[in-house]
Length: 307
Image 1 (cartoon, rainbow, N blue to C red):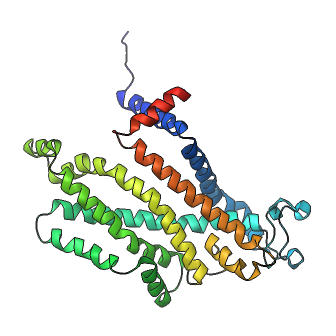
Image 2 (cartoon, rainbow, N blue to C red):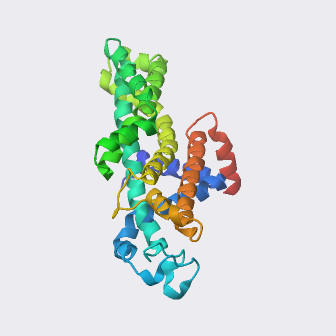
Image 3 (cartoon, one colour):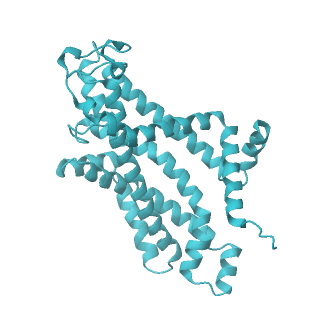
């Protein structure tokens, strides 16, 4: 009869997840923000399955229906729009495109920018001079103005908006990754890996990337809010997502002519944008502390008290 000890890796992973959960509970604002974002993501994935038809169904008898009136059903709890469509259902369905554009743009920008930054930071040749100049060229144009110019020439579809917004955000990740790599590659553990004969790819992906990844994730969380606001601005200007597709920014734009007599048409989708952006900022501040070994003890102490 032999005693089999449990694998160490799953135990360590569970302990790490428990530690992060404890630190999240220690910050009430971050916990509330995380719960709200989970609800928004759930609405983006599940909401269109059940509410997409209702969100587009017109009923002129419910035109500009006031909020908090349950006579027409729970979908009209936030009121109706200028064509009698329920605002609550439309806000839930619009979360899909809003989150899709923001997540796609941030993911593409982070992958491309981090890859170029890794190449520029580890290269000592011509690539180290050329790649940073690419970031300088992109940053020489205001991001929103560049998006307006490109979308004026292209069809304003979801794919084109993701591409345009991703291009404008690439320099952030490129320059951050390059600066971090230039500092990390001089550390002792990287030099030791080179002496022991580790390949360049192993050094980059096994030793360098895990060190800079927390910084990139923190920036991505904060950048998610910026991209979502940029998409809302483009939709508000009329060059973003076009009907019958819908986003929160487009709903704000469509409700603008009715602000004097039907304020709720723009107020509720605008409030969704504000709350989501605020939640992302709060969660980003928590991640910056939780992923920093020198600052993590503040949350760990709070987590032990709550536990």
